[in-house]
Length: 46
Image (cartoon, rainbow, N blue to C red; front, top):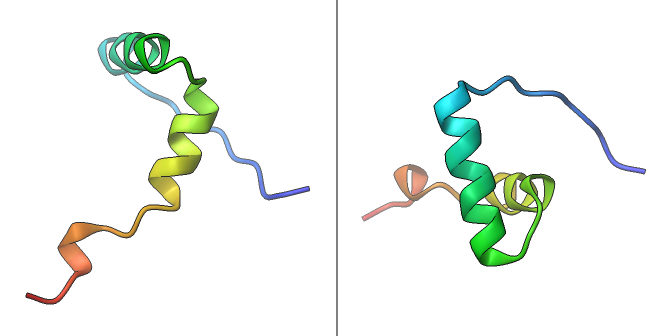
């Protein structure tokens, strides 16, 4: 079992994320997991 956490989003952000997940046929939890596992472009050397 992995580490679990709770995050609080604004109503607008939450709605947009749920709409995005509905279009992508994924869950908010899956989306956040993918984002957490994606390297940040701001830390990549140019």
